[in-house]
Image 1 (cartoon, rainbow, N blue to C red):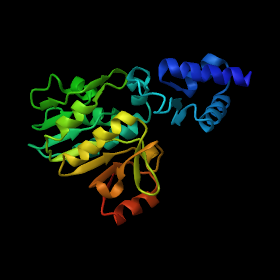
Image 2 (tube, helix red, strand yellow):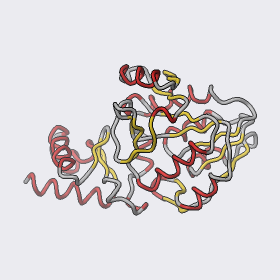
Image 3 (cartoon, rainbow, N blue to C red):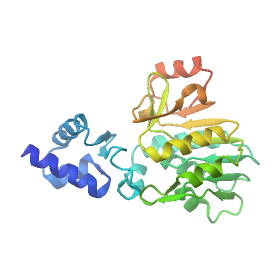
Image 4 (cartoon, rainbow, N blue to C red):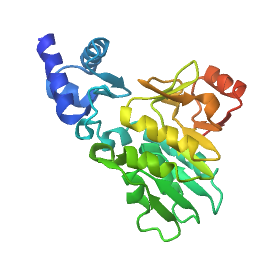
Length: 255
């Protein structure tokens, strides 16, 4: 029974890209605790990656954008913490700034906070485009690239080359987590070069990471905390990480 259940979990992940504990428990007719044990076992076998509230396929399995974790599912996880981070980040933007926004659910919320502001926003996020497409106050520049439909974003060599032609006042970047040694991590192979391009193309780089990712986990190293100028997170994040950032000369803003 356990073996068949775990096979079904992996099958559903291959179809949906990501799935929640609650959804699996309901559909499989078992408890949430049983599902979590299954996810822990499957992660130890390298078949999935656990996230807060569910699981998704590892990045080396999900290079095809159409089987990547759905944006709508990720957007519902820790939404209140992400919104608080977005509000604090918006206060760091000055009128007239050119702002680079990374792809991701927190930067989508930041775009909502920046509606009506006299700023220029440059992004590869189709979710940010959806938020700002009808806002006449914001000058919106969309980077080109390959469309990752599941995650509402643009990636690839066109995106990276366009970033090399730009220089912004401030960039806001997301990540899967910050490790205790100060490594900023992500889980998706195609996103890492874009994130590094954001850092290179801005005078100031700010990492947006809710308290559950600070510290956190990930598959691929984007940069070190010393490559950042500031981190915005929530109260309740690991205080040892705060000290690490401070020693690295990084401003920590607690939302």
